[in-house]
Image (cartoon, rainbow, N blue to C red; front, side, top):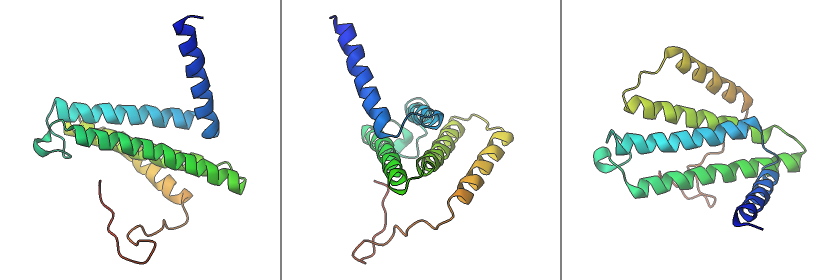
Length: 162
């Protein structure tokens, strides 16, 4: 066996496991992962080329900011995994997809913000389409999200951006 075939077998096995734990691979997950990659790269361009990042001093590249961005993307995938587990527990098949769509909308908005920081004009029809998606996501989420400003023990806690 060559190194190339061992790599292909290993990549296939890891991909299969990853797909299984997320409840199968869907077009929604594909779109989310692509949007995550575009958002990350566009953030690098905003900081590295345009020096216009609102997340770093001077607007330039900052490895700490980049690392935090990657950690948040992984945390997003963990939340999707949890949503899939909730689907399994409830015997439903829509919670994971709703969570994926919500995160995808967030990634698209972030990409547009990055493009605006680069000076790219954003077409109004695209902004209207995103508003419609946000409204639809809000209708799908009938329950008020839990108050995240309260700690479990009742002590007040203000969520940070770190």
